[in-house]
Image 1: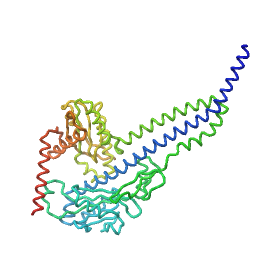
Image 2: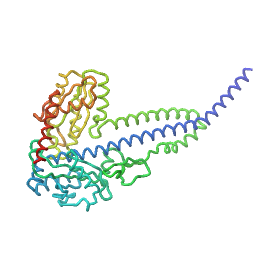
Image 3: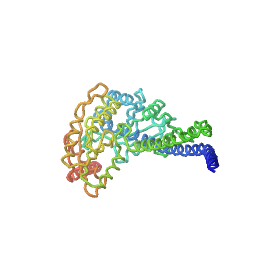
Image 4: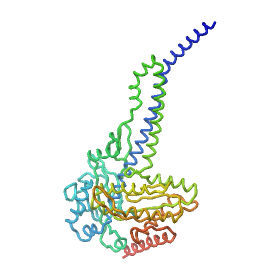
Length: 467
């Protein structure tokens, strides 16, 4: 009786083993395909967010570059007041080409070219003859819109490019209001050639990144210009599922005969796949919420964190910082050194952040900090940052010195994140106007002063228009 029971148990074990040998590779293969398909979807979503962040960053960087040059007293004198072609060649044409801008053009109020440079040649050029699509439409926007610089992606022959048009103005508002010459506009054109695309691939660790004028069959992100969609960011589709299935076929065959190896492989691969999913999701969140140059939080992440902190209550303060003298660094040693300086400043500030504080880059050389602390402590933190930033930086063997103007604002009950950042920005602007290097706390009189300046500017413009 016992013998028959033992024999019966043995056959049952063998039957279960055979079923396991048959089912294990099938289940394993199905799980692997499902998991890697999910990984493909996550990777695709992350690439889409990365492409959107890249196009926005390139556009914003090109706009900020144009703003820095267009609002320059010496350029106004050389291009508008007293035409000085030698100064323009040395400081605009050749300088822009040296930092990656392919073409420069200065036009008058009737869009007639006044000065031009195309790559290394200082010569006037016609946008239509150079096949720069959308130049006239962007010029019309620059003339009619109440903004200093307008920026769009454009087509230039068989390439994608970025075009920015900025009104040439004096740096100080009083000088701008006193100027009587007709408006002139500075245009910078950047064309994305093969070398530029290779540089983007290396910078983003994205080897299959490409830019195309036509829509591909694979994954892509549309790039919009003034006339609609003008190009695409493209990349190769993720093929992890197919590659995994091909790679595991010999192992699944062997699993029919080696139960232990099949089971161990199954559990091991499930653990690895789960870890990969978690890692990919974390990387996707990081890419969506961080600045690609400095690694600090971006404006989106700052707004989300501010909303969370304001919802919890407490003594929440925002500090908005703008670096004085950063444009001169870009002008004298180049934008590559300027980028390196921004990275080093971020590292220096991050090392001195209080516990729980958030550092974000919200503009070209504009940063913000969210911190929960008393107002006195927030002002003290601003003064500490001023001392940190004023200490010289060693960038590529050169000692670079800048200063910083800081505005501080305290959250009030029911305040939304944008209003908190706006108040800190108003306080920073007021500090910068008085003297660079100040830290100032927001109060309502600053809004009144800002509004008075806007009203005065509008009245003077209206008066000038009426003659």
